[in-house]
Image (cartoon, rainbow, N blue to C red):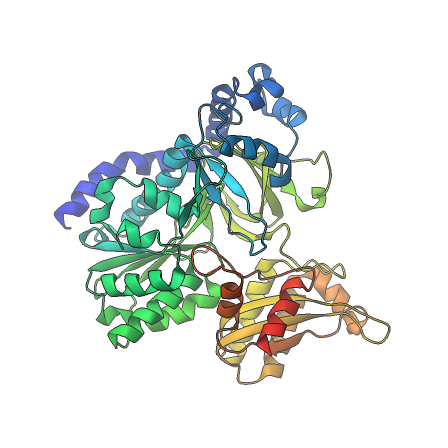
Length: 503
């Protein structure tokens, strides 16, 4: 084992034990986090409004404090951006993560306190390496650099002391100086706002580095990596970075991209670890490469609640604490955090795969689904069905989106899938049939609506031209960073826009 590994192993031993502790004592650790948060914020404006000082139990907290979404929280966020202090969390908030979980023109600005930055986001990054080294003690990852691909930052128009940008940019901007010895590209390039210039400079400056790990969103990293191969003239990434061994990814489901990465990095020694890191907090890390489930990180200054999906839209929804949840059931995720978010509905849905320890998968979004006819198709359904269709037809998907075709007096309703293929299916009809059959096998509501074509007809497939989704994002000034393609929608807003551009 290299000397640096022995040093890192010694440093990480304490944290490995802490992770084991909360994995085995999740309910107790969460209660500690709850008490800490309530006590810390009791003298803020929000804490005084709901009399945090008198709250002694989670039940009282749930009864007294309503569930917030961003629209309800926005007036306080605007005041924070204008420089007011002690509103949601003690002290002043200087950083705001511009949410890129949607490609709509309306943006969210999530407050990032010092505690959220250090105890949650940075701790999550450290824990990824702790978990990875614990899995692979002989790793050589510390002998080289991690190539990160992040967003940009801008000065907030409301206040000179308030800065906003993509979460990745905020993290890069606040990293200790010594991390520059272990990451690439340099900060000035990483924070460039112009995507195509950033792409060029990252390519030029990283080709000759000893890159041992990658970290970022799979879709955008794919664009960068292919550009690096094109400029270098090499056949695969191992010819450029022979010591490359890890891709830390998150933001979107990795399944549609897995084969493409295997083609770019043809090595059985290449490892992949998924993280669940949103603007609102760092929530979970894949702790077992053989399983897609993510270990819920319970000591980052976040208290979790879980809302049954049947409660969505209820002004006083019922929520569950950690120990009340069940496996294989979808819940909307609600957090109270050291960033000043209180009973905040972040918009993601999760599903527990294990309760000892608590492990989850991200099953979708509360607003990104298709339910135009009562079929309730969520992103997890879509990803599994697409994977089956690709396996059956030899296809490889680059990007996709889907939405409803609404019924009229002459036609039944159906779903339209717009897919840009890396490799087209051997038979488009077989692709659709496999997609449809798999959706029916994993979603009883969809199956019921498809029964004898009474409500839903077989879905349709529209093949997107090469580069369509990139062109669409570019037209909306959404290139790079953490911007994502909306996978599912309950209307045709995205589909019609994209199809028009596809002509």
